[in-house]
Length: 114
Length: 172
Image (cartoon, rainbow over all chains, first blue to last red; front, side, top):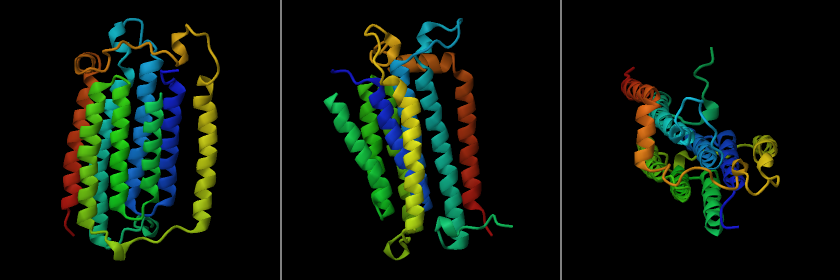
């Protein structure tokens, strides 16, 4: 077999996603937690693209066929845009918290507690 | 196939390195390696434009922001955070192990059953055209059929820029 089946890409995306989820749970540095969230977003992107390549379904009856192959790629482009905005905001918040609290342990942050 | 297995192993090793490294800089470097390997996998799927976007946006923009933040926060050795307790680590292993089993059986499992060889929707043979990942095809679809989503994404990025400046520059 020379061509990689869809299940291979899905398995890789699944493993990357689970590794990212483990990181979000066990790490205490908020920057590393952000990195793990990026890892999970990338795993989702990989699944989107694998499905776009191997399992294309029509959008709607009146949509031209040349657009129906683009679903997954469009989703990935928007995920990248959202990820860029999210990282800018999140790192800004981490910087602001660090400036006021002088500590970054995520388990010690109880700023929102009443 | 062999190339894909090699790439997948490197990618998973880099992902494990992200959460295993003690130093955040090393985590960032492992994440850069992971993003680059994913870009190569995108190229192997004939997705040229998205492979280039992956390199530019993730390894260029996002990792630059991460490294900038790490350097500004000066997370050097004295401030290294302590490891989580064993209870928390075992809880994490339990939860994510069950997540792995459930997702594998529900999402990957249906694609492992044997199918008739001429079934293009079975996930073995690609039914996409060869040039569906070029800049021409992607741009054509993005600016014709998905143009409203494109405008909303640009608005979101604008709000994100202004919001991050507001958060970062607040005094007192």
